[in-house]
Image 1 (cartoon, rainbow, N blue to C red):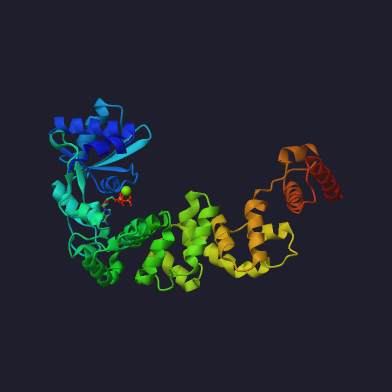
Image 2: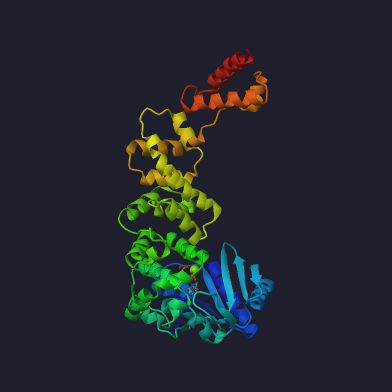
Length: 415
Ligand code: ATP
Ligand code: MG
């Protein structure tokens, strides 16, 4: 099957130019180069994907350097172990030397040596991700599909390439569920059996790698689908006994998406996932996944704030009281509680804080207060704090109001 015409239609102009330039330079260096992985899968499915991965039978770094010397692409990074990243206009492209992998023990990182395209494809997770398209001049556009990935795509199946795949690398369990749910595919029967049998192998995977795969899931358009499936298969419980994927998670995730800026979303999802945890669960989870400091803080804050929600459950609270209760918490933790809290009054206070109170500033600053006769130091600090509180509670609104209050305060303080 030749996909040369599809490539022309599928890729945006700059990427197409970059691919052609790379193809030409590879010919001169007598190296064979291929498009591989996700982009091939997505091109066949008709989904856009402009994260290009190229595999080179030869030396990917040498090829990348050659491309930057002759064309306008920039070399962003390159590594001793044969990978490079190029940038051209707004696009990037990854090149890797074809590699052969051997697993010394389950879950460990594999030993890597240079190999052929076929070696490079067999080390991959699933048949649908193990296809390539040749970019060499003599067979430009030819689909290379030694493991029947295209047939599996047509039958909407996720299939591992060999029986040891999940035990070699149990992150593939998480990856498989991610693709299954993203595309609405099914696990091929034998793959499904192997997957279930190998769930305990997740224990061989480091926290960083599990977390990375969970983050990829949480970046999906509807992560709750994969989360539910992971729960049903008993995979979440293998990561943490208290982790649940059922019922309200879907509803909360859906609300989160509608309210949040996308960059903060994975963190917010993480905070929602652990909302029913107790103190022991959360500490174990943070250690198991080696969660970085900022996210750990947000997750701990989420639970700490949850225990303090009853304090917010009074309609008579002044805005400044809400402010002082909430200012010490990470905003993601407040957001998680806004989505998960039971009490409408509490939820309203949390929302008020996020949308208004946390942005409230006095108009007068230190310089202007000095001109009004307030002396720098503790007195100034005190005046600013009272002004801020008055502003939060709507007792002052304009600059003139603030001046008036500041003057009366400094007179009082002088006495
Ligand atoms: P996505 O659309 O999710 O980015 P992708 O196929 O590009 O899909 P990546 O996570 O970017 O996925 O990985 C690129 C390629 O590397 C995959 O297509 C797959 O062939 C291979 N790969 C990634 N992780 C593994 C793994 N744990 N085991 C085997 N192959 C893997
Ligand atoms: Mg990718």
